[in-house]
Length: 297
Length: 294
Image (cartoon, rainbow over all chains, first blue to last red; front, side, top):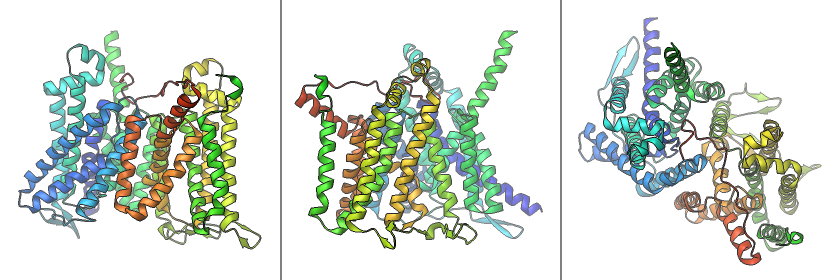
C-alpha cells in the first residue's frame, strides 16, 4: 500500500519535472512575444549533443550542461535576430519559420554526426523501495526544476531585466516610450528561453539515447503544457505541469503509456475550449477581480 | 484594365497550362510515373482544402492551429495502440502500427490501374479545384472574402460569420477526407505514421511556400514540391529536408504571399500592366496574450 503511494508520487514527480523542464523555455518565449517556437525540441537536441560531446571530452558533467545552456542561448539569439524578429504579429508564419529552423537543425545534425551518438549514463545510481528500483537522478531532476522556478521568479521579480521584461509584456509601446530597448528585450528573452531549452536537453541527455530527432520526444508534451499553462510562464507552466503530470501519471500507471498520452492531449483540447488563455489566464482574471473589488471600496 | 478580359491573368493561364500538361502527360510516360503522379494528386487535394481554410476563409487563429494539432496527436496516439484484436470496425481490424489493408478502387472485379486510375484522380482533383473556384466567385465566396478582410465589419453587415466558418471547415474537412481515402486506396495500406506531427505540418509548408491566397498556386506548387521532394529523396535523401526547410524559411521571410503567387503577380504587372489588388494582411488575426504586439 505504502509502496503504491510512493510509486504514484514518484511517477507524478517524474512527469511533472519532465513537463516543466521541457516546457519552461517555450513558455518564457510564448509569454513574452506570443511566438510558439517549434524549433524548441531541436534546441533541446542541440543542448543534449553539446552536453554529450563535452562530457565525453572529459568536461565535468555540471559544467558540460552549463556550456550546453550557454551555447544554445547564443544560437537562439542568432535565430531571433535573423528570423523571428521579422515575424512578430504573424503567428502562423512564425510557427512555419521556427519549424523550418528546427528541421534544418535536426537534419543538419543527422548529416554531421550520423544517426546516433554514444550517450553518457545518468549519475547517482538508484534506490529501492519495496520491490521497485527508482533512479536518484530523476528525483534530482525534480529538485532542479523547483530550484529553476525559484531562480526564474527571482530573475523576473527582483532584477532590472525582469522589470523591463514585465513592462515589455504588459505594454510594449509604453515600455519603449519609457526608454526600454524592446527589440533587445525580445532578443534576450528568446536567448533565455533557448538557454532553458539547452539546459533541459542537457539534463535529459543523461536519461535518453542521443539521436538527431531527440526533440520530438519532448516537443508535443512541452507544447501542450504551454497551451494549458497560458501566457504567464511563472504561474501557468508549473500549474499546468502539475495538472498534466498528475493525469499522465495516474492514467499511465493504470492503463499504459498510450492512454496516459491520450488523456493528456484530451485534457489540453478541453482546456483550450473552456480556458483559451490557459490556467494563468484564469488566475489573472481572479486576481483582477479581487483587486478590482478592493479598489472599489 | 478592361472588364471583359478580367479572366485573362497569369493565374488562369497557369491553370490552363497545368491542365493541358496533365492531360497530355499520360501519352509521354510509363505506368509507374502515372501512378506516382496520381499519388501526388491525392495529397494535393489536402493542400487545396487547407488553402480554402487558411487563405480563403482567413481562419488562422492560433487556437484553431493548436486545437487541430492536439486532435491530430490524439488520433495518432489512439490509433497507435489499436494493434490488438479488440479494436475493429466490423470485419476491419485497425491493427495499430501493423497497418490496415485498404481495398483498391475497382470497377466490378477489375481494380483500376494505370491510365484509368490516373484519370480518375485527375478528374477528382480538377473537379474539386473548379468547385472551389466557383464557390469562391459566388455570393458565398464574396462573404468569405469579406470575412477575411475584416471579421467584425462582416458581422455587422449581417453575415452569419460562425455559420460560414463552420461551412468552410466542414467543406475543407470533407476534401481532406477524400484526399485520405484516395491516398489510402492508392497504397492499399494505411498506418498511424501518416497521421503524425510531420504529416500535419507538411501540407501547411506546401501551401505556405506556394501561396495560400490562390487555390491555383496552392495546387500547382503542391504538385511541384511533391515531385521535388521525391526526386531529392532519391538523389540526396539527407539534404531533402534541409532544402525544404530553407525554402519554407525563405518563403516566410522574404515572400510571405508565397513564391507562386508572387510570380503570378509579377507576370500580371509585366504582361498586362495590371496593378495587383493589395489585400490587407491577416486583419483580425489574434496574437495570444499580447493583443497589441505589432
